Image 1 (cartoon, rainbow, N blue to C red):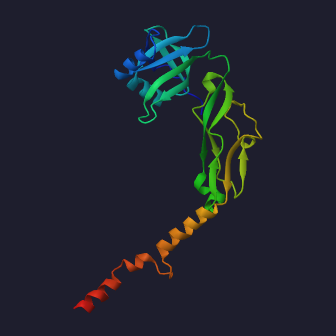
Image 2: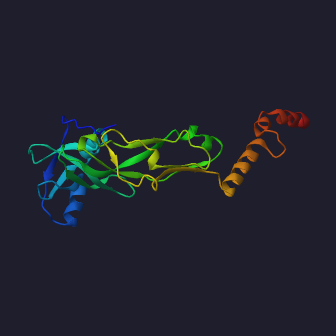
Image 3: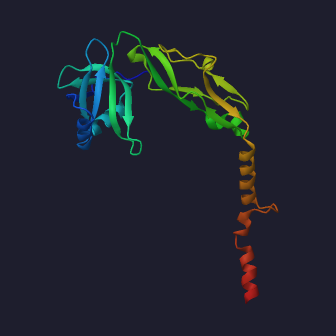
Length: 229
C-alpha cells in the first residue's frame, strides 16, 4: 500500500531557538515535542509541536506528511526518526526530512509477517522466527508504503524465506541483499520447549489418561458426601 499524500491535513509547527537540552525538557513539561527538519535545499530548522496533535497526525498519515512552520506554506516531509520515552512510550523528539515528490529517496520500512498460524511448519509445532524487522528501500516519496507484508502461510518445517521471495509493491526497489537477507524461519521446537509441551499436556489430561475436567464434574464429590452421611 503506497503512502498517503493527502494534503488536507497539515501539521503545524512552531520554530524554536537552539537552547540546549534544558530548553527541550521545559518544552516536554508543557506537552510540546521538540524536533528538527533537515535535508533538501534548506538549512536545518528546529521546531516544537503539540504532542497530542503530533500523535494524532502520525496515526492517520502515511510515510509522507505535510508540515507548516510558523504558518508558512506547507511542504512534504518524511518522518525520519522518532525517539520515544522508554517506559511511557510517548514521543520525546522527532526528525523530519524534506522531500521532493519527483525524486526517489532511500528509507526503511517495517516488515510484517502474515499467515503465521496457517503455516504447515507452525501447525506441526515448529517455531516461527522473524529475521529482518525493517527493509531498506528506494522509491518516490508518494510510493513509499506504510509497511510491507510477507506471507509465510506456505512455509514448511525447517524452511527459510529470504528477501528473494518477496515481491515489492509497485515503484519500490528493495536494497538489501536478496539471498542473504532472511525474512523468516521455521525450526523444530527445542528439547526444553518439547518437554514443556508434554508437561502441559500431562497437567490437562492427567498421568493416568483421565481428563482433569472429569474430576471437576463433581462425580467423586457425591460419593464423599454419601460416605459422610
